[in-house]
Image 1 (cartoon, rainbow, N blue to C red):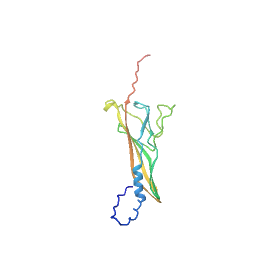
Image 2: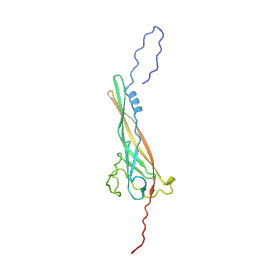
Image 3: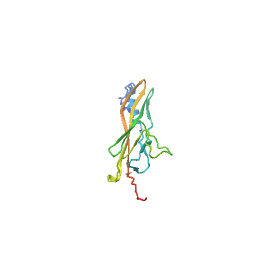
Image 4: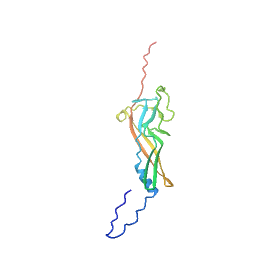
Length: 179
């Protein structure tokens, strides 16, 4: 914390030490030092999505609790940011809210299976949209609290966001007659 210099005329006594910042003031410093990670979007299927095929949504990073501490001699305060929800704007008008960072698609999973906690199924192709893709946004909501020197409190929630573009194709089946 910065304190402006105090100028004293020659011969005058040194003033008393500047008061230490309060725990709430240190909490503000700790909050400003929080480095919230950007969400890293991952999907299955990877690449283009298909109409009526479930899309699994999860984060490869950006869902871990973060903390930062500010201290002066004798006083230490820690601010903690915890992710509380993940909100996906899917670009087709749908919103998906997840209580965690999503579940990665299992290596031997059934591509027709829906995600147990964080997924979406597109009902229309993205053809004709700008860049033939739906603009997708993943927003992590963080609750921020602090504690130290026998005191505690909260700050307003914070968010981090990542963007992607999902191309959604429509699978066409051909019936060639035969038989």
